[in-house]
Image (cartoon, rainbow, N blue to C red; front, side, top):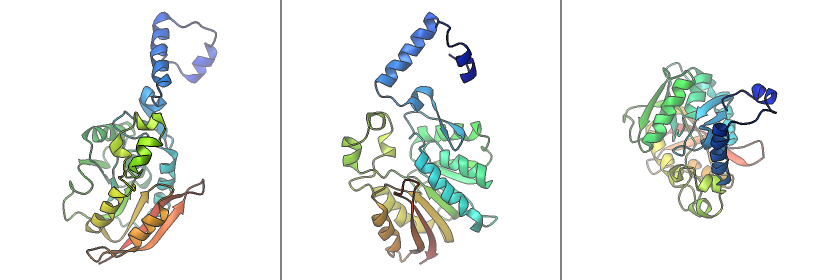
Length: 257
C-alpha cells in the first residue's frame, strides 16, 4: 500500500482499490503457502537495522544478536591494526553490525555469489560499504595465505541433515537456502573444517566466536579443546548460553602450535 503505520490507522475505514486488492491477494497467497514474511517483504529487521533478504540468504535471527553481543563486549583486546573476518556471511548482517559497532574493517566471506551480492547491497544500505570487503569462496579458500585476523566470527550451517529434511518448519525447509542450514550428518561438518583451518588465519592471541545448535555444546567444546593435527591449540574454550538458557555460542582464543 506504500503507506506508514500511522497512515494505515488513519485510513482504516477506506476501501482498497482493485489494484491494491489484487496485490494484497497475491501476497496473502504466498504467506498461505508458508513463505516467510521476510521474503515476501524483501527485508528483515536485525539489530534495529533493516537488511535486504531473498531465498539466497538465511533470514537473520534473534539468536545471532546474542552472538554479536558477546563479540562486541569482548572486542577491547583488538589492536589498532587487527582486521575482523565474518565466515559464512549470508546477508551480511554480522559483518555490517560489527563494522558499525566496532568501526573496523571487516572481511566477509560466503560460498554463494548471490549471498555476496545481497551482503554488498546491505553494506551500502547501512552506510558501512567503506569498511567492508567481500570475498566469494569456500571458508578460507579465497583469502591470501598470509592474511591474519585478530577476530573471526562465524554462524555456519549447523543443523543435522535429518533435522533439515524432517523437523524444520515449512517456512525454513521449503524456502531458506539448504546450503545455509545443512551441517551434515551430525551438523558439525563445516565446524570441524573451521577448527582445522582456523589456525592458519587467526593470529596468536586472537579470538574466535561461533554460533551453533543448542544440543551441540559439548561436542563443540571437545572439538576446540583438543590439540589439532597440526599441533594447534585453543585456550579459554567457553560455551555461552543464550537468554533461553540453551548452549548457543563458542568463545575461544588461539594460543599457538
